[in-house]
Image 1 (cartoon, chains in turn blue, red):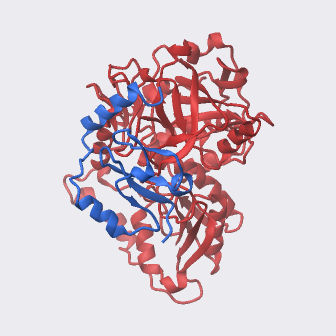
Image 2 (image 1 turned 30 degrees about the vertical axis):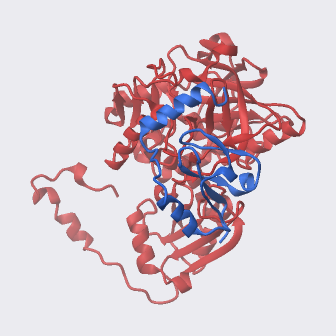
Image 3 (image 1 turned 90 degrees about the vertical axis):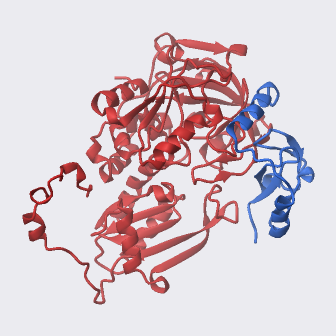
Length: 89
Length: 475
């Protein structure tokens, strides 16, 4: 199945998000983790799920890790504070 | 009379106080606290305009700018924004919009010294986005976003284009900007081909008629300032920008305008962002904006759209319905109504009701809707006894008047929408027509009804002690 996106997992906070295939897959762009604002190469992603890869491998990568949940707003705010002093300024 | 956002809010508070909710306790919009409250209201079935009186800015301090949002979450308020009555919020609003969209009212120019938006002018280091209560909307958004309307000007013909685009906070004087291959994208590309920066003025806060007008579906290179003036019913008042003077005029009555440049051939990652379909648009490689100046009224109000929710869906539907209706009317004169419901995010679904006289008319109407607005993906054509604004009725019609093998058509490889999460191609998608009208040429069962004469004779207030008019569902 084709898809316009691929999922990645941040090596720093283990948060998962997705990127646009044509823009970013197999490129040198550093990805921006929306949760902790870590910038990382996609090769560094803890797991990748794209059109060519297996869903089961992606699922198992979560189940074997004690993924840190980033849904707490205060965690995000701390991350955002980091961004304020660094990213893009 | 000038168009002021504050005047609109004051009118609502005076005439419809139930339409406005003030949140007086401090909230931090960059920590999802504003959208959390909006979501609670939504879950409670309430869609008021919300004023956060003491939002925090990006320094974490109480901002001097109150935050206004959810302005467009009810059609009745949109009708009022265009000077109509609340009772005209269904098809009359759509048709009025379409009629005004065909006309033009040229803007008038006023000097900077008389422009409310120039009461405070901040340039250089003082043009700091952190002073604003910028909203981070949904959990996967990487930063707060300004989600109102950048204005750009075509370098060849000078026409202005105004459109809702997402702008990611990247620093005190830097934004990321997402453009799809639409009008603004074409303007930016022209500048980029000349290796020149694209001037952009983000109108962060203005009267709702300005924003409803900016959603017009006029052809590329129509001057949006003129169309917006017509839709608002009065000329926009413009004034020279701080950065480019008369080369880029800005709305004088806006509350806040951010001026910046999109440097050519510069890209950064941007997103993900919770988008209008109610899903996240993926992280992409997109343009940036370097902020040059911020101008605002002395006691300016900061405005935001609750994207991916009724605030976003209702306003998206209105500008398209009237033009679809008028186009269908030319071919199927018995068309009774057109509605793009919020369940279809105000864009993807189109309900059309017609008094069908000939089999095949329903499909003609559907094709016109698909051709008129490329957002439309699924068209539901129903009979004239069905109110296209009543989704229960439309789905009843689908349930009882559709045989899938006879009444559903699928058209492949049509231009779709890059933000449609179900598309497997960036450009192409599939369209579907569901003809839920009764056949003309074969006998078909009649819909049940309680006799009208008995309905008229048996009045509920005579039998139900607590009956009151407000309990009567709207027709």
